Image (tube, rainbow, N blue to C red):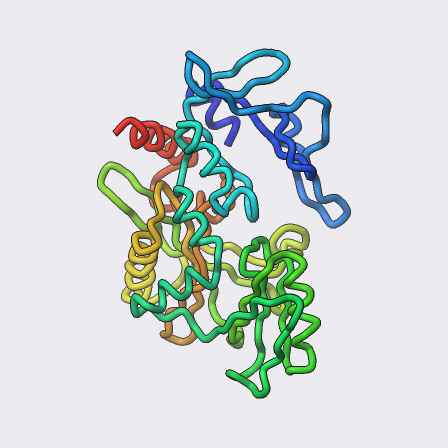
Length: 327
């Protein structure tokens, strides 16, 4: 994305967040080196000089020991807690800095799988079968099978399939919850489906309004039970198919529901809406308000098939964020 912004004529100031929560300047070379492998999970290195967002007579910007850098807009690409949950969005909003994508409220709603599914189900959209477990100190094991196994036990606020367990009996429930509670203070337990098709739709807000991309499909290799962290980032464990080979009526319905969910949860700018397809049953899974955002990610691939290339997407999102802040 950095290269696309530079080619478009934007002046880019890259900010990374360390494990300790400090904001630091990172170089484009460092950003390009953040590649996950089996033996290396990259992170932003600590350094003595930190960044503070400040407001002065020139407007909001980043203050470093080297000076003041005005900021016209922030394009957050931090996944999970602290980035996708409304925290960065709220900080920027309080500073009067336009942010690409969804605001505080919709980011927080979409990040919380329980809240998002409750709202979607209340609107009459199939979100599968699930229940919550919200007390890590007193894990209450169900007295019977609430719905058929397998179950997927997930952190409510999480991403990249971290902390998720697939279980096939109640005796595995407590350990799976303890694993999920390492990432979140709430857990959602979902009924698993037997090899459903995993579908995704990119949503982009343009001059003509909210638009849905062609439907894409994640086809997980047989070596994996589901689309876990290794399958996503390390072992090349899935095939990304654009467009998904679907009955046209089903594809149109998936796109329609994706737009409906985007509107219902108050999203803005862009997002990726994920579904399961079980036979002809379309089941809402989740919304990613900061989807994987590289030229080869599923979001970009789906829009590329629709004739919109990656630099166009980046430019449209930045311009839209700044225009909306002025209106």
